[in-house]
Image (cartoon, rainbow, N blue to C red; front, side):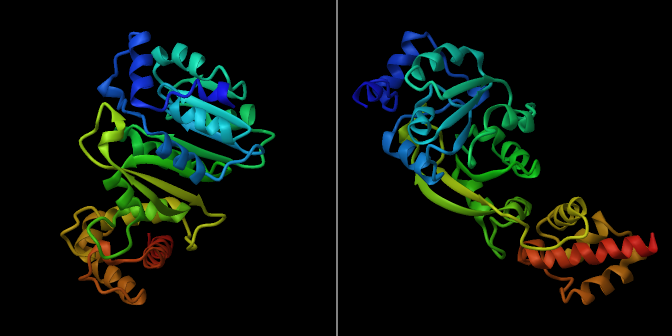
Amino acid sequence: MSDVRAFDVASPKRTKEIIQKHGFTLKKSLGQNFLTDANILHNIASAAKLDPSKGALEIGPGIGALTQQLAKAAGKVVAVEIDGRLLPILKETLEPYPHASVVHGDVLKLDLGKLWHDHFAGCSGVSVVANLPYYVTTPIIMKLLEEKLPLEHIVVMIQREVADRMSAKPGGKEYGSLSIAVQYYAVPDIVTIVPPTVFIPQPNVDSAVIRLKLREAPPVRVEDEGFFFEVVHACFAQRRKTLSNNLLAGLFGKPEKPAMEAILAECGIDPSRRGETLSISEYASLANAIWLYRKQFR
């Protein structure tokens, strides 16, 4: 184990040495902020509850600091890296871990079903564990959720503000369509808050580690999943406006106002409420009622 630990890159000194050795320059456009705190990296890996029978998919491994921690816990690790300049660095830092491999590509364009089949076929469970670039956090997480991959957990370091939105409850300013989308597929839990000082370079905001435990089934029944999210987005189109106004603008025309008011009454929802006050179950009831109305009268 001592030989393996000698390869660990989780410190500011080792990170700077590796960057300088390879003449690597960080690209702001790729959101490259390398985490250098070994304890935080260990906590991220631990939050995924990995063991040698399980696999881990990492997105954006950087120079491999988190990848190393994952490889110590999991039986199979696959890291997807978009920046080809990092491939020789990863080959070096992951040398002690033959069960860790790197895929060069953009995770938003990859066929993740094929990746699962090719790399994780023998694993008892797979989790995504990553320090995600801020600028693509939401698209990546939504792709992972919407593709309904056989995941146990998604454990990611993201901007604290986004983590707060994902885990928000109805009634607060953080609660919105992202809260509902994430909580439809998973149970969110903020593991820890991370200050900017443990990154190279330092970001301008706090980060958070959030764990999403994937649900076996959604918490509500909806007639049409796509339409459910269409209703949610319509109700948050202009946060200052009432449900009635947002629904009229986004899903109903003025001639259908009486029908809309009847649907809201049927669901027990006051039309003067705003989108951030509705629970996910209220949204499900509302979406189902509008869907049935459309099926009957349109």
